[in-house]
Amino acid sequence: MRPLLPLLLTALTLLPAVQAVTPALDPNYYPHRPGTRWTYSSGETQVVGAPVTHRGVKVTPVSHQYGSTTYSQDLVEYRADGSVWLRGVNAAGRLSWYSPPLLVYPAGPLQTGQSWQAASGPLRMTVTVTGTAPLKLAAGTFNALILRTETVTGGRSSVQLSYFVPAFGIVRYQTADGSTIDLNR
Image 1 (cartoon, rainbow, N blue to C red):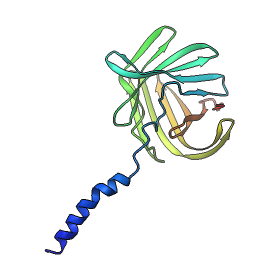
Image 2: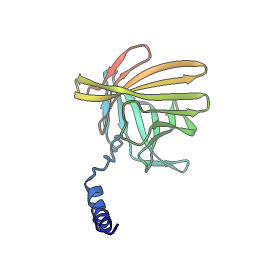
Image 3: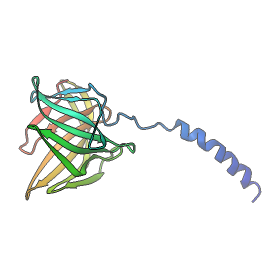
Image 4: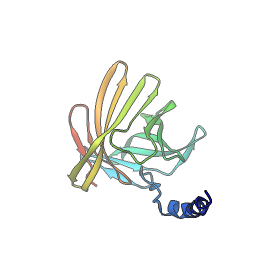
């Protein structure tokens, strides 16, 4: 038994070195730097604002704009564990606050086959990472994760596909009616 003790002690002293070379997940795995912009083929531009505190919660506003007009604003919470939550939506001068909030993304990295659910009031969502897809778009060439989101509200169900690139964002939406909206820049 004695020869095992030096080996075990050596292994324990090397453990911090092994952990130190393990790459940490990019803190911007789900992009949220203020000023980040995405412009899509639909004419919509999404703009990340500076974090603010609303109802005691630190949220990051993401504005949805057409031209210079903002039509809605998502209030998104980026938690310390890496998960992303939708806390509320400002639209037409009215705030809809989700209690409980909706889980948009669990802590990364996302993996094919992973699934999560979220619900608030009559709204229910199930998201599944169904695979990857190579995409060549005006904004660049990407290998995107495909996220299938089924939303149920008021007894009606719809499905949307989103194509997500870590540390970059959503590069394509395929809406419930089959329309495709691509990232232009």
